[in-house]
Image 1 (cartoon, rainbow, N blue to C red):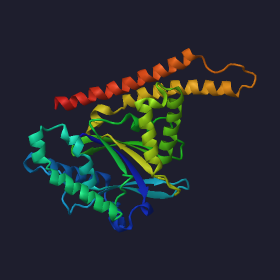
Image 2 (cartoon, one colour; image 1 turned 180 degrees about the horizontal axis):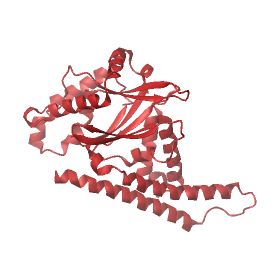
Image 3 (cartoon, helix red, strand yellow; image 1 turned 30 degrees about the vertical axis):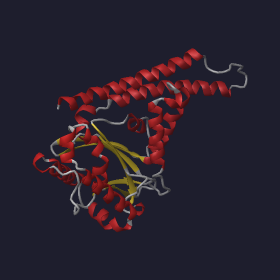
Length: 312
C-alpha cells in the first residue's frame, strides 16, 4: 500500500475544529520529513505480514501536515491538512479487496473491523472532527486521476503558489506538487468549458465528468481568507514512474488544441460583419478527436505504470 497517491486540501487554522488547534500548532515545530516519516512508520507497522491491522490504533493522533505560504500582502500564512487515519483506512478497504481471495480477505478484514471503522468515522463526524460530506483528501492506488493533473495544468499568476518539491520518505524519492486552491479551480473551470463544448462526446466523456466532479469538490473548500487554501498532489512511491509527468503533458497538448478552436469560435461570434454560422464541422470533429487521442495517450501511460503493480 506504499503506492497510494493523494490529492490533499490545506486550509487555514481558523477553518479547523478548535479542539485540534493545539495539535496543529505543535505540528508546525516538525519538519515535513519528520511528519512523513511518522506516517510511513505507522503504515508499515499496520501492514506487516506478521501483524496485519486494518484499523489504526485508537490512541494514534491524526497526521497533520503543514505548508507555509505568503498571502498577497507578503505575510507568511500556515495552512494545514488533517489526515484522520480511521477515515483513510475505512475508505481504502475497497482498494485492498482485489488483492486477496475471499477467505484471506475475510480473515484479514473481518466485517466487524469494517463496522468499527465506519462507526469511528461517523463519531468523528458527529463530534465535528471531520466533515462527513466533504473529506479533505482523495486517494488512488497505483494511479493518479487525470482530473487531478488537469488542476495543475497551465500557468499561475506570479503571486500564487505553484511549486514542485522532492523529498526522501522511508527511503523512497517522493514528489509533491502544490498549487493555490483558487488557481486550481480557475484552471479546472477553463478545462471543463473547453471539454464540454469542443471535446469528444461533450459533457458525456468520462474525463469531462471527472473534471466536473473534482471542481465541485474543490469549490466546497473555498473561503474568503487572504489565502483561500492550497492543494497538494502527492505522487507517493509512484514518483519514480510518474515524474516528470508525461501523462499530464499529453493532456495539456489536447487542451491547447481545444483552446485554439474555442478562441476562433469566440472571434467569429464577436465579428458583427461575419455571416458564418460557426466553425466548420470538420474542424470541430478534428479538434475533438485530437483531444480524444491525447486523453487516450495519458490513459495508456498510466496503464503501463500499473503493470508494475501486477509484476509485484
